[in-house]
Every structure is written in structure tokens, then in C-alpha cells.
Length: 176
Image (cartoon, rainbow, N blue to C red; front, side, top):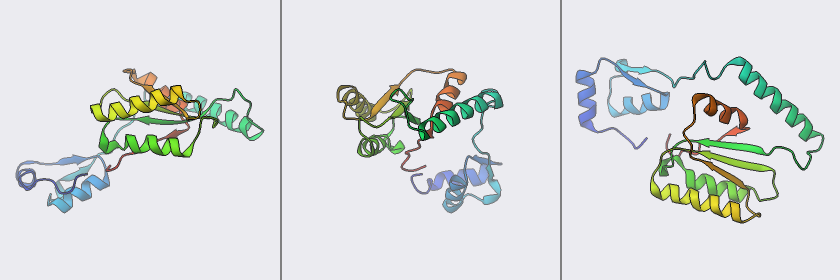
């Protein structure tokens, strides 16, 4: 994600590694361009927990969202659940968190029935400070759209519920 890998890595991987596992075609292409022999690269995508993301749980979430969208189409009631954007990841500059928050505040205002839920358990202090500032501002100023920041360590089931509750999963990364 930061350009070619160091030449010493290329030499070592080509000489010693039997196989290099990569999570995406973009990473595979980047390593190939860096000089890693293509025959050494194996695409192994990120996995999903089939125990947590089971059909009954997903089906229930989809049915609930369908009912909500049908109700919204008929005219949302004042107490309707907000349209939820969800970010889960590190509080890191390369993840684009400050830009995501700026875009969210530019696109929506306090009267919009939306919320952005940010979940992270790690990060760099400068980015954490930005998120804290935006969260405090959103709590204090009703003209800003709703923002929730969740820093709890969640179980796999709780994490799955966070994803299923969201209407949109946000990936604001600047380089991945």
C-alpha cells in the first residue's frame, strides 16, 4: 500500500519462501511488481466466521431492514430508526477516519435521520483525538449529524450484531 516493498524483502522471499499468502489481487499485483515471483504468491482471501454469520441471523436482519425500508417509503415516523453508517477499523491516518468524519458532517445535518457508528479498539493518538473532538461536537451541537464512538472489545456475536445493524459499511481507507 506504500509502493514497492524493500529489495531485501524481495530477495529473501524469492530465495527462502515456499509460498507467500496475500489477501487480495491488489496485494498480489503489488508484490509481483516489486519482483516477487508470481508462482510463489497464493491468493487467500480474508475469511468470514460461518458460526457468527449464520443464515438465521442474517435472514432476521434482512427482514427487519426490509420492513423498515417499506415503512420509510410510506412516510417515516418521527421515531423511526436512523439510517446507520458503520465503520469498524483502526484509528489510523491511512484508514481515512478524519476524512470520513469531515465528509459525513458535510453531507448531513442534525435534522437528518442518520447516524455514523465508529467502532475501534486501537489507533494512533492524533486520529483518536480527531474522533473524540467530532464525537464531543456532535453531542453538543444538535445541528451536527449523530455520531457514536464505540471503543468496547466485543465478542464475535456482538461484532456480528454491529454489522447487521448497519445499513452501510464504510471503508474510508486511503490506501487499501
